[in-house]
Image (cartoon, rainbow, N blue to C red; front, side):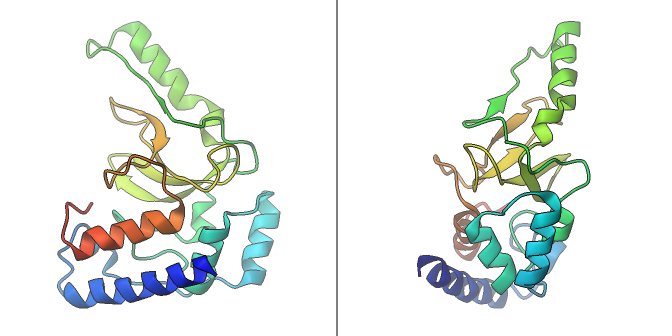
Length: 198
């Protein structure tokens, strides 16, 4: 199966990266120290999914049940799946976007701009259909979309900055949205090559 071979490749690349960076100086590795967590059992994961009314994407499920449930990863590392279901999220409702939503506004911070930003920030639909993979800093988060047209894609929730919005993760210069395991493997490839790694 393709996912199993990709996870084998990820495990091999992870070891190679960790062994090549014993002082944790690549990207934000000083934060996660290349520590992996014990995978979650299929039974515990199924119960978690049932309690939140959602089935997680296949590649992410395979990753957290066979490789690591959170721990080392892009930016500051990943949350466990238990923490990824943050209390303010509603993952079972459909994620409302397909191609991203960025809020454009002038730098004058006019009353209209600020009102639009506040409305967008507080819109409960922006918490639908996703779980949180991890923090990026400055209030930005990396999300995994679990329902809707963008299901399976890694997105950025950047509603706290002046370029704010919700959009497919483009952190690695990718032009197309990435599924979870492609996102994780791209991080490994760039980190091994020492290319501008967050």
